[in-house]
Amino acid sequence: MSEAHSPSEKHTETGPENQEILLLYDKLCPMCDYYCNLVRIREDLGHLTLIDARDDSALLNEVTRRGLDIDQGMVLKVGDQLYYGSDAIHVLSLLGGRSGFFNRLNYVMFRSEKVAHVVYPGLRSVRNLILKILGKTKINNLDQIDNDKF
Image (cartoon, rainbow, N blue to C red):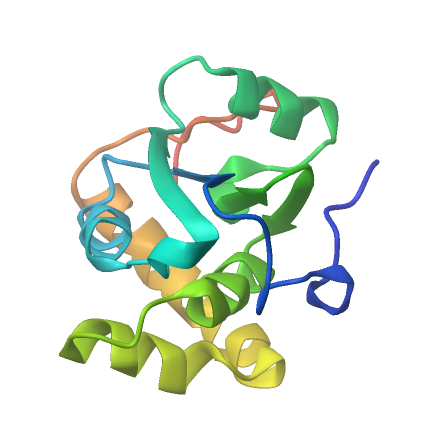
């Protein structure tokens, strides 16, 4: 299984203007959708494009080819690099603008790689519980047998 890059391999403080930055997430999750629609990146780094993981896309296909389970974490693509789960929210916090309460809070909470790794599994568990209560199915991009329910 191919792994996404670790945050230590990133270049988040500088980079080409208008680079491609994509965020693949589950739009049916109210918590994920709220977070992804509020998070902002600094304009000098590029434009953030949100992609619903329940729709077929080139990024979802790439994530699947790499063996990453989208039901276990969102994916951030910056240029050619993929960041998965807690690494994705960590990198988003570093790329983020500092304007507005939400983006300042996001930066303070997740700028630490260690904190992101500790907090993210809890957020994922809450996500899974919400989707179970709502009666939603898993995306199951890896086509695992009997893996459609939370």
